[in-house]
Amino acid sequence: MEEQKPITIAAFDFDGTITQTDSMFGFVRYVSGKWRYRLGLIWLAPLFIKYRYKWITPHRAKEVFLSHYLGGKTDEELKTLGEKFSREIIPKILRPKAIEKLRWHQQEGHRCFVVTASMAYWIKPWAEENGLEFVGTRHEVANGVFTGKIDGKNCAGPEKVNRLLEILGNKEIEKSYAYGDTSGDKEMLEWADEGGYRCF
Image (cartoon, rainbow, N blue to C red):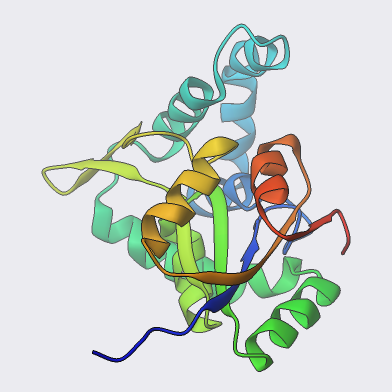
């Protein structure tokens, strides 16, 4: 049996690290249209207040937000819209220095991941197109329809490391790099051999 060589990995947070803005808000605006999106923000104002004062968990706040805008849409419809968003919008919000660092890792032969609290619909197509493996918050689908709920845990904080380790399994890691910009990346940055906080 051929002996597996140790690997080097690079894990990038997405929103605010690779991008200049939060892609989840961008995607729901893209799907909903400007006016429905703005009206929704007014309707959801109590939710944002609860979140600001930590009267609601990030997990539950995200479910309420996504249910309002995307709940009831079919899985296939959201995949199609996500692919369009990844082609039309994401390239406009990328941080050039982050992409430069990503390309360096790829040229060095490192295994690269995007590890995000956002969902696959709009980020996975971009990640795969750019040679990254996607690790993100899983979404619940029932009878082909997105319920608005999270399947499992929100992929933030310790869950980012848990999900990475789940994918890597028993592979020996020679060196690990991680890049992030918020407290939700803290554990991933501490886990890595070399971490970059708001470095782009």
